[in-house]
Length: 448
Ligand code: ADP
Image 1 (tube, helix red, strand yellow):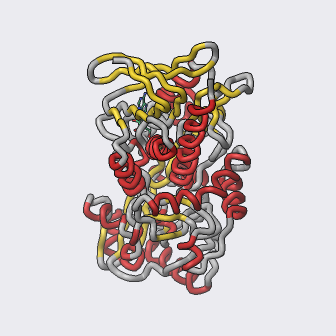
Image 2 (spheres, helix red, strand yellow):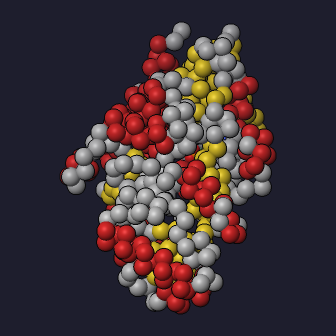
Image 3 (cartoon, rainbow, N blue to C red):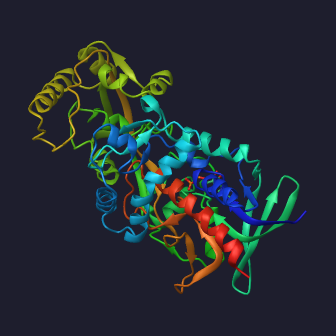
């Protein structure tokens, strides 16, 4: 049952599919293993979009943006803990990632603003639909068209090495255990947000937190890579997403705030700049009564973002034609809510939010019907992981490259530093997934 291939990819999320398609297109024989019954991973759940600077779409809309500005925003958002070389690669190549996805038939024709970015650079499907399903649809369709060998229900168990060089992986598939001998291995197995024991072992205060992650995000790739000698970095950098439906784990996309929604607490009051970075907004919500808050928006904002149709259908939104009625449903004081909206409307009119310093004030939120969604922070992204360089080569704990081992996506550390900006995960997985495919192919042709 053992098989031979040029490149084997662990994980069929966005990073894994991107590297598989790219390695295949360059001429490699590729096998992808996916432990779940279907591809997609956490990527399928990605809501916001894909950040890229200086794209034709931005230019057509008159948005001035450059890789340099994206670099600065990403480093600042990550508290300057990011690996600058990785961020530079991300900022310079994200534009090519958008071009590539468009060439593969994807719909990334909308662009909007997300928290922590100084320019609208978050690319997403027409009308602001969810990005992750479109990234996976695009890459998976490409993989299917190319007849790439994707083995679902097949879990990678270990990375095999001989004389320090990677020689393949051992997997457990529906018919038992076997070995895939490969010239190069790409680890794209995602993060560990769904493994609360592992999360709490690095950050004890997150014990018992719910998560936005898919159940397969258990850190297998990290453990396997560590056993193969890889260095893990930034493991305590774990991001909570500020706006998640309590108890349910459904994430409400940051684009809701980007397109104009505000946050109000259970007293009906605004309390923070909604467009601050995820770590800061999460911390601010946890300081409010009940450790929850409300995303509030009007019909004008709702119509600007298709993603909200789903929230309405799934009944996450309370709605009413007047603020009094909505306040009653939210069980917050109506007078306070009305005063909050009056102040906010004045801030929008004055183009200045003196209270909380929000810079982007796109709408006054005064068009009925009004909507509110209750939210709280949940574990969202594990920023730490396998140590790589801009070529996605994996490093051991002595600072040496592990020959034949590459990694891309959430399994890696260093790209996002101490805090990931919304829209940068999709940029990360497509950009570094693509590079991993190239590098694994080159290695498979040049190594002895
Ligand atoms: P990324 O965004 O980095 O691509 P995803 O979470 O989208 O990460 O994808 C990672 C994929 O890897 C998921 O589909 C997950 O089920 C898969 N995976 C995780 N561990 C293993 C494993 N041991 N063997 C095979 N696939 C795995």
